[in-house]
Amino acid sequence: MDSFEIEGGRRLSGTLDASGSKNAALPILFAALLCPERLTLRRVPRLHDIKTTLSLLEGVGARVEREGERVTIDLPQFTSTEAPYDLVRTMRASVLMLGPLLARERSARVSLPGGCAIGSRPVDIHLAALEQMGAELRLESGYIVGSCPGGLRGAEIVFRFPSVGATQQVMMAASLAEGKTVIRNAAREPEIENLAGFLRAMGAKISGDGTSDITIEGVARLHGCDFEVMFDRIEAGTLLLAGPITGGSVRVRGMDTGCLEAFFAVLRKTGVAVSAGEGWVEASAGGSQCADFETQPHPGYATDLQAQMMAYLAQVNGVSHVSEKIFENRYMHVPELVRMGADIRVEGPQAMIYGKPGCYQGAVVMATDLRASASLVLAGLVANGTTRVRRIYHLDRGYESLETKLCSLGAAVSRKPE
Ligand code: EPU
Image (cartoon, rainbow, N blue to C red):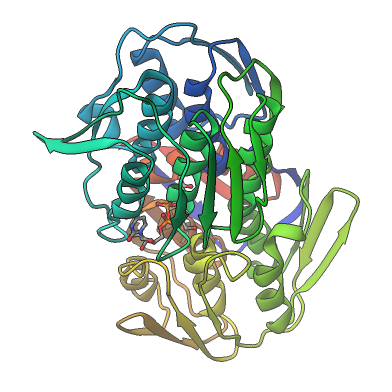
């Protein structure tokens, strides 16, 4: 298990390119299961979760070729309809195989993902929606076993919560279902629009993505296409924070401000100067004031940027209040940030950050999940002395060559085998 060693206290500045989005690429790769023709995907990030997904696709018979950020997938015929536990347990998004398998092959055997560090994360909304579309589902030895001998049919589905994954699941399943499906209270994340764009490029009939009501008219067959994955807005937000937290300035190219407005609003409140031009955004150190925020479904503040912003707020002036509204256990970075010198108190879903400039000292800390790890790296960049972030396999799941990118901005981060 590798760790990162970070020599803190260097001012970071420069320009970087955003990678393709993990959370857009994963559902798009699963949507490839719907198509019997050759597909080409561009800007697919080189990440561990992507490798796992490609193995899942190969496991059901897909021919996959990968060259840098370009992936081609050919799945004229299935050799299996199973997503095995050994792969699913490392990546919860694997449950997104269920809808496409049922839609195209009318049967599926997908391991039930367990809980994860950030909460219990049930998939009840996914399952209820697929049942409403005619799937018969049962739990058998830890697997969701599904069939729909007559095929899936369209339905009006009302979500109790705008789940990102469940919205993607239904969009994929409904693309090949008979008749019309309407999703009410759908998630509005930009990654949903990106998936809809891919499904449309394959010939699906979808409208309303980006709003709370998405309509899908099922078609009999989808066709091959060439499609580019959107930029990773969570990676971009993390890299932009690396500028102001170290008193510097970072510009990220290949992105736009549209999908991170709530994040930029909080940054501006703290005094950071955020500017944008054609295809780039820049964040530069400015004032140093506290700011409150709560995580919410899009267009609210993204939960995936909560830990990183907390690392930043711990070293500004004043008391910031944070409320985590999406996951019940997403403060696992807090005890580690506290070990580095932050003053943060958590009560249930609320956190109070007593900010103090210069609070961080280097320490050996342990990464617990992907975004928690990113917050520890940010704290390490500004800490006095050396920080060692252990278990960075979490980071490798979601950040492409993070150490290389940070070093190109002037950071001293190296990967050490343990
Ligand atoms: N939920 C249910 N039942 C369901 C589905 C979700 O109760 O059937 C609950 C979850 O337990 C959670 C909340 O609803 O408390 C939000 O879950 P959602 O389904 O919206 O999230 P997800 O699809 O599982 C994706 C991202 C997450 C990101 C969330 C929220 C991917 C692969 N994952 O997860 O990304 O935090 O949306 O924006 O797209 C990450 O990248 O670090 C990450 C965790």
